[in-house]
Image (cartoon, rainbow, N blue to C red):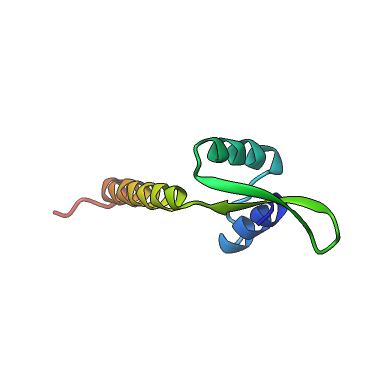
Length: 87
């Protein structure tokens, strides 16, 4: 996807709970490119504009899986802390 499509995808997939500003998305994409977690190529959009599209790499998938696991463990810990104590 290209940047604007990524912003829209995040917004839709999160039921509009997450909104990423384009100004913070592009620096993040640059960091992911430098870390070889995504790759990019220039293409022509349906509106005949030149757009840079991004695709996750195999290393990016592995990194994403690790981050999701780490986040899941953190959320479990938060849930335990916020749960009422049993007597």
